[in-house]
Image (cartoon, rainbow, N blue to C red; front, side, top):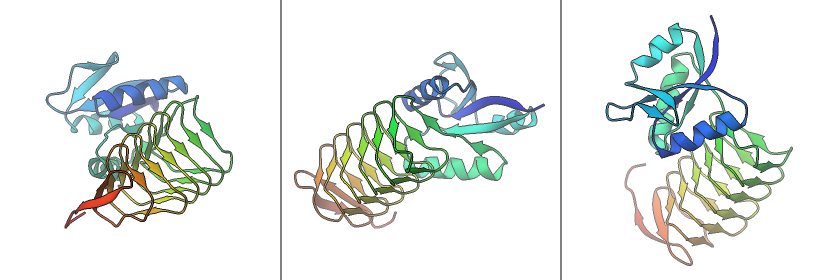
Length: 213
């Protein structure tokens, strides 16, 4: 028999926010799947320790999952695994978010309270748009990117796959942030940032480039 409850992968602070988002949008969370050191419950939701529980849940009729993992790389790997296992990814979107009707949204995305997403922006699969962030018109937030709380992106900003913008970042119009790049908290981005770079400061300057994404 098909079960309509959502299975949340993760049992940490990020999972707590996701559980409340799902509940606020009328979805039921039946279980979390965590690691061996996870708590027994997460916001009252039973936590099953170990990924092996996913097969049993699927056999019991569960088909909806949300990957509530903050790490961009790990979130992508787990999402790939659950999709290959036959699960569907759902979205966790706050009812207080203001999202343009012309924006395009992927699956497995988290959009937190107070977010604004303006006209014709694109939010790809597994992206996180965190609390109070603003995404102006024609932005493109690629797969598994994470826009931290209180970031502000002006129009036509392209944030590439698995990039991370730390809390309170600001980005001027037309900027491209490369795949796997990280912008430190409070950074103000006024020029393009290459793939794999760590950029910090006002204006944000590259201080390190990872050799492998």
